[in-house]
Image (cartoon, rainbow, N blue to C red; front, side, top):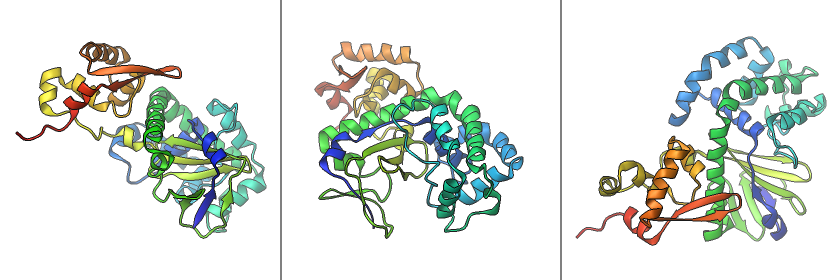
Length: 320
């Protein structure tokens, strides 16, 4: 069983962060996925032809996708969590490109069950992988990054809100399939038969992404991360407004009211619904005036949440 030993200090310092490089790695996985999620298909259709042409012209990239991305273990030098001060894709990518050849080769071999594919045994393999990721970022991720970042922010806010209400274990229990808090400072990350890792003094990060399945990563010995799919907020809301509420308030306002679990900002609601920020703001003002929602500040954001009356309106109607 793969265990991380996490003491109270590590838990107290743990945090959610966004990583452009990790999201680009996840997007590369989506481009090579034969079973994309329904919400990913429009984006995939826009980029798939160019992506396949890019692979056809680059044998290293083609073998990387065909041999490494299809394994169950992401090479360490590719999936590392961001370091303090790395606030952009270029900063994260520069660190990846600087990986020594022997380190990159060893990481790839671990992913490929001890065998380094011959086309990846080149001395500049980290640079070549970096070139592929730079292409994916520039062509397919960067134009959509503001929207993705808002969606990930919404996911992080929801996790933090859940953590405050139900505890740390509940907030992380469904991040990736085998991740479980076992108590007594033990976090199970997978079912592998590996020695437990002691995270005392290290930083523990949680990174949302668009990946179908997540992975764990580390930058030894200071930093560990759980990269997890944020698909729950990219899909349709779990709570739908009752039809009668839609007739009363209008479908858009009723839908926004139903979305407010957990509390969300105007920009997060815009990202999740596809509406303009101004449109969302106008609807929220009406809901505020009707005392169906209230608002509070959280850091730099203003979060909206349902009042008691708003909760009653979105609740399932009781039979008479």
